[in-house]
Image 1: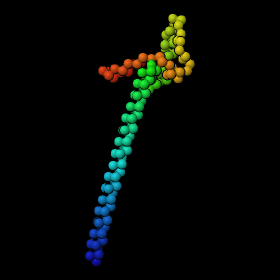
Image 2: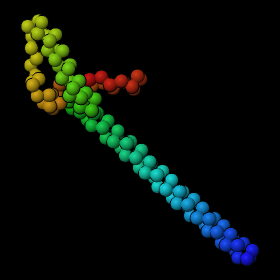
Image 3: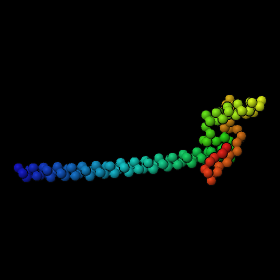
Image 4: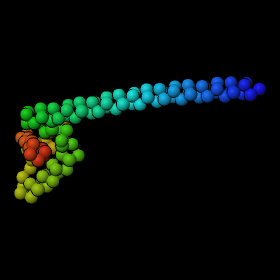
Length: 122
């Protein structure tokens, strides 16, 4: 009877050991896949940022307002403030302000990028 119990214990120990090895292998595979996905994500983020900066720089070279740097909410706020400031002097803007999208298509800017302080001026 003891031999049967010892054999069962040995078999059970072997099964547990095999299960532990399989679990470890599976965990390693999962961690490897997660690492690959993470690296893909980082690469996609870098490509996205690079693409965005390329678009911004192209817009600047063409004297266009870079949407990637100045969103429509900021533009709307700034135009309303400018409009208010110049109306005091009986002046008005000569560019269309009722359609902000048009402003992104007009050659109305001059951009400067300073590497020294990392700031972008438009």
